[in-house]
Length: 410
Image (cartoon, rainbow, N blue to C red):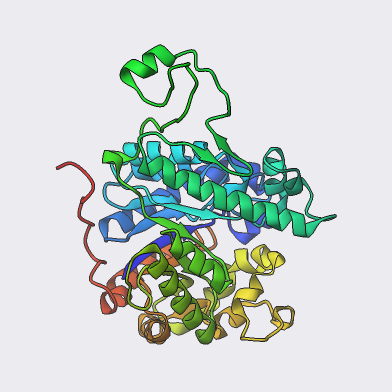
């Protein structure tokens, strides 16, 4: 099992954020970068799979300030040697997919084969509707016609994933969809004589037929793709069927088991035979302290981001039992603990909880929601140290030493 660290980054503690406009305070952002590097270097030295970020823009409040995850990834890559870097994930309906593919490829080249890539549909309407308005008018307004908005978002997502896969798989390619035509139709290319001589993709009349990334990924490899954090088991099957690792956020064991079976069916459609849980990820908060009482005392601060921010987008749906109305679920740290979204305690307690979790969710990737500024850095580093030395060795042999440099030249 691989263990990865996923950050929807906070620039400050709850106290900093509640003072207002924390997202625009340079001293908080610089402190965040310093702390992230310290955590990344520890993870790098101890064999963690990945270190990456969500994507959100315009968050002046100081919550999930990850407005350019590829640049944050590159910053982390520059300070580490082995760990993979990436995002969970790029919000594709708000982007030109060729630009996303180019960003991933450049990150992969600069990190010498350490990039992974996650793709999501997006939930935060403030920036998604603003950034995406030029790709579909339906994205500009999710109030008057929510059905059209959701349909456009899904269609744009599907086309974008297909384009990115083609860009990574082929020297040159074309694509014709509802939203994207690549290259633009009937385009006469001024550089055609040069392209004919030393490139590809033009016809005898200088019309552009195909395009290609430059550079492609490191040694033209295909990065691992992830698709988080859908509750819908159908989306998990769709992700696997196109070769992406779905990442489960649901907590109910029956829902998780259904998700695993649907993902297994998706991988079969992709042409890959998998055991149950192979090619699937799961995400949880994990907080380890020297004692159960200490972890309990820190729990509310640790999940401040969920309680104060994410819960407003009905993340409680991830906690629901089958048939349960998410609106009836109390929003508290104790609820997250009771429903196994937050695994907190001493090393022994966390080991018992992880063992129970993996008994019904034997996944290949376990992603940790990391709350980088929610607690003092010393406490966060202690939690990371305890889980590294006293928890993960019971469940995986990947943790405890640097990862091999399989993708990179010796």
